[in-house]
Length: 119
Image (tube, rainbow, N blue to C red; front, side, top):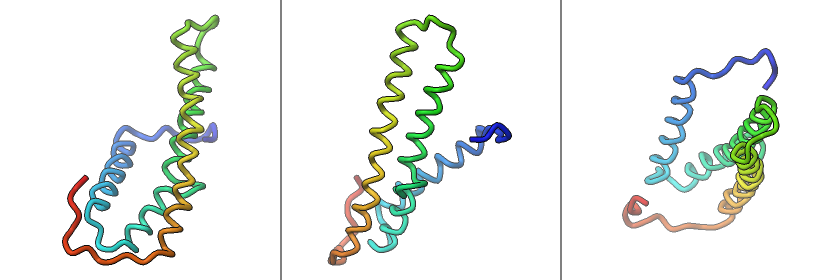
């Protein structure tokens, strides 16, 4: 995020989360596996998908806390920063799911006799 960037509004963040909820709803009964794969490929994109964005947000937040916390840091602040830094690569590693979605394309699937039950 560059210094000239503005913070997204609460409404914009809410809209983004709403879109993710819509993706979840759609994936419960997609029109086709091909369409579901297209949606998943975007959501799990290895460069700009949700895992990469969330990992970057966690890293940035840890850095922000580090930059503003007055030292010496209490144990609680050190633990929060450590958890965020530890979670970031775990979340980012989920970008490998992007390749899994691609590999689905090489397999054939039967059309379900009826819509699968909601998860």
